[in-house]
Image 1 (cartoon, rainbow, N blue to C red):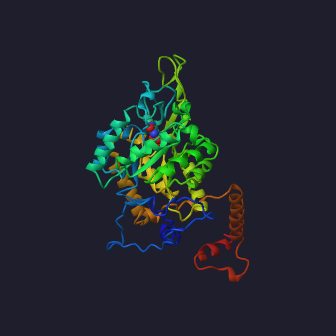
Image 2: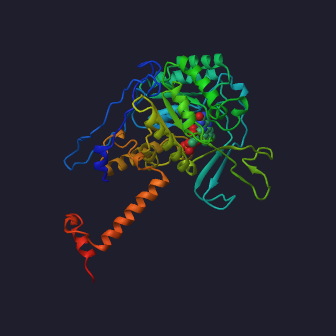
Image 3: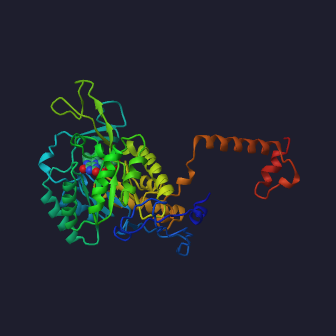
Length: 432
Ligand SMILES: Cc1cc2nc3c(=O)[nH]c(=O)nc-3n(C[C@H](O)[C@H](O)[C@H](O)COP(=O)(O)O)c2cc1C
């Protein structure tokens, strides 16, 4: 199917709206769901004389306007005022700050806290970095300091999207206090870190919640009865089926899902010292894996979540944010083709700097020009229909082989001649 055919036939379900538009927005279809689906889009794009379209990267997600779908993922690139300001100045579509909690004194980091995997032999210091493990915790900066910086950023960049990332212990009052204080700064949305795989689960935080649907449902309930801005649930890939906690988060009132956080990993063992990496005073602990190597895993998780959202929440104003190993516009296009509204980048910024946004936008525009897509919605989710079951692949292949065999045997009847295949059909009946 050509991309132009695809553009006119694919149904783009645009997920829009802000919290409060329809109260608790996330009741599932069939249980009191009110459709806000915009409907089937038949795109008639306007182009220049050569018919080429200048792609528009802007997106509206849960009512939030972003100049492009590229979002700084929670982590070191969103740790303080200086770096978040830099992200806005360089043109990022939105910034998600490093995860904060009420009491930063409980957060004690170690160094070294990163270990990298290169596309080379074990222990090599050369070669492209393809994997990145971290044992970094959430922000160890005082909450008051972080909140002041959010406020300052929102004052200086009122039109830009700043999203707070939060995490708390199993305590409703604490969650409510954190949400209230974060919202007072004027942030546009909140991402909930249900997914940090190391350090925090020991305090029943992060992945400990994302891996326990009952706990997740209870905490999402607390969060959504308090929050007045859109809430995204950031999910852990360290579960058997990521659609289960994602469904719980959406059913419990979250406006969006973000996936993936890092994958539980052991980066490697130093074959001289026999010690694991990253090595802190001779010891280590499993950490979170990110960077290029996780991209295919992230795509699979996002694809599953998108399928579930289309099937069970289609028409609600829900959003999906794809995360994992994005370093190019093409990597981002893949997430969008699988249904993501936005694409987050964390390790890619740590490796390439904030200026990488220009390359990401240029490459995504090149992809869109190639296919004559004028907007992100033109191709969002367009690759989802091409996933099927293995049984169906076998059936399709059997049918295709039978068809090719029939072609080789020649036409069964004169009525089978076609215009498009005429020359091949003639050849198929020649003996030399
Ligand atoms: C050093 C480091 C620190 C991170 N800290 C956080 C965090 O505080 N909160 C959070 O939700 N995710 C955190 N993440 C996860 C990233 O936001 C992202 O989900 C993950 O790294 C995959 O994306 P990437 O390959 O673009 O980095 C961190 C990742 C790294 C590498």
